[in-house]
Image (cartoon, rainbow, N blue to C red):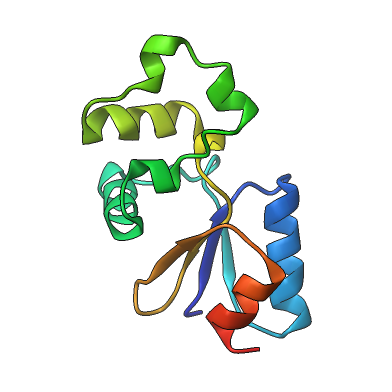
Length: 118
């Protein structure tokens, strides 16, 4: 498969994205990143491609709001990767990785139509 979706199986947004892909017959693999933790290098590469850690981390999530204040200001890549490994639900979902390595996050019907030309 040339398309991989990273997310959490019980996430409503991930379910919507996967249903959309099935409806439009877009072949893909799904990876539960809680069950299959991602290497720090992968997380760092995604953050760089997206324009920074803030684009990869969902700061409006309950998980983020419940973090201790001192954990909300990671100062380095290793601190960000540790935070995401400790709290996988902090990552925006789904993360879509295309065959060419292009990374995008989130799901909207129109966004996926543009992304996949449907």
